[in-house]
Length: 186
Figure 1 (cartoon, helix red, strand yellow):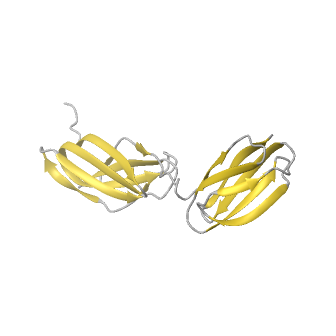
Figure 2 (tube, rainbow, N blue to C red; figure 1 turned 90 degrees about the vertical axis):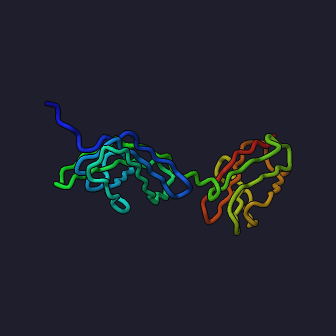
Figure 3 (cartoon, rainbow, N blue to C red; figure 1 turned 135 degrees about the vertical axis):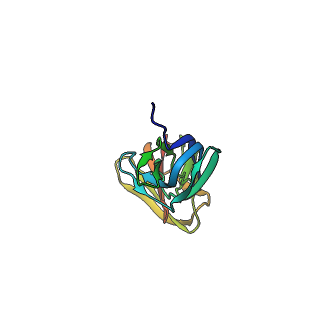
C-alpha cells in the first residue's frame, strides 16, 4: 500500500514588492500538519528560517491557502522553500522558488551624455537621488580633467573644447553610489 503524504502542496509562489517578498502556497489536503516554516537562502543551497511559523490546518481534506511576507532587502536573487512539520516532528521540504532582487535604480545614478561624440560641449543627465553629487571628468589614461560639486539629478554641462580628441569618462558620485559613462571627443 503506498504511503499517504501528510500534505499535498498544490502550488508555492513568491513575488517581490519593493524590499518585501510575498509568498503564497496552497494545499489540497493535510494530515497531522502542525506548521510551515519559511526558509530563505542567498545561494539556493544554505537555507535558514525567516519570519514567523505559519500554523497548519492539522488534518483536513479541504483545500487551504497560506501567505507569508518576508523582508528581503537585496538586489540579488533570493531563494525560498517551505519546511512542513507534522505534529510528531517529521518534516518535508517543498520545491524551491527563486525571487529576483529589488531593482535599486532610484538609488544608483544612471547617466546619459549627448551629443556623443562631441566636438566641444557635452550635456550629461543623471537620474540620481537627492543631495550633493561630485562630477569628475577623466581622460581614458586615468588623468583627472575636472571635478566639481552639483546637486544630484540636475543637468550637467561639460566643455571639452580645450581637450585633445579621445575617449573621456564622466563619473557622478552620490551617497548612494557612483555611475560612469563614456564620452568621445572628436
